[in-house]
Amino acid sequence: MRAKSLDGKCWSSGKSKYQRAARHILSLARDDPIACHPSLANNNSILNDQTSLPPPQEDPLDDDIQLEHYPWIEPPFRTDYGHNLKVGEGAFINFDAVIIDTSPITIGARTLIGPRASLYSGTHPLDPVERNGFKGPQIAKEIHIGEDCWLAGNVTVLPGVTIGKGSVIGAGSVVNKVSSCRD
Image 1 (tube, one colour):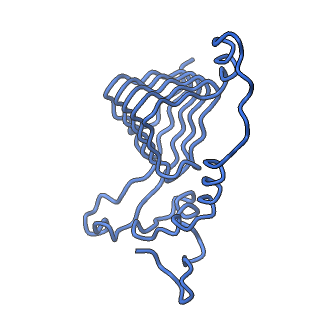
Image 2 (spheres, one colour):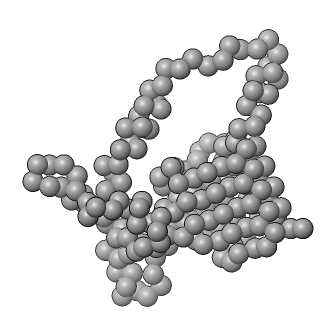
């Protein structure tokens, strides 16, 4: 249930859920002013964008070359907010990725992420009394994945993790600690 003022407009305590999460401050899971966030209008403008695409090339390979440096994300792809996710040039995210970007998540250039990978920047307290179901706090910590990494299929990355440049994470792994750079 969203809090509303007497005039029916969305109300929050002054800091959005995003602002609190970005500062690693506990936020209440039931407090959801992000639903009234101005970025929704921005998302709608992107969906309704009428900008024309570049003209098609005679050789289909030339069309692909135009997109060569952009990240490639295979659908289906799920994200919590989307605006907390930064994906580097030439990165690839395979299908069924789940990215909970309560706090910023950075994926470096040329990084490969396998199918069904999960990146979770949000978590909850381990103490059940403090966790208190849906009424308890949510904790957010940034995730950083370096350049030229390979996360194989079904990898799970937990909050606060940094994966160093050039790292390889095996299929089915759960990454809960910082991994160092490959020299």
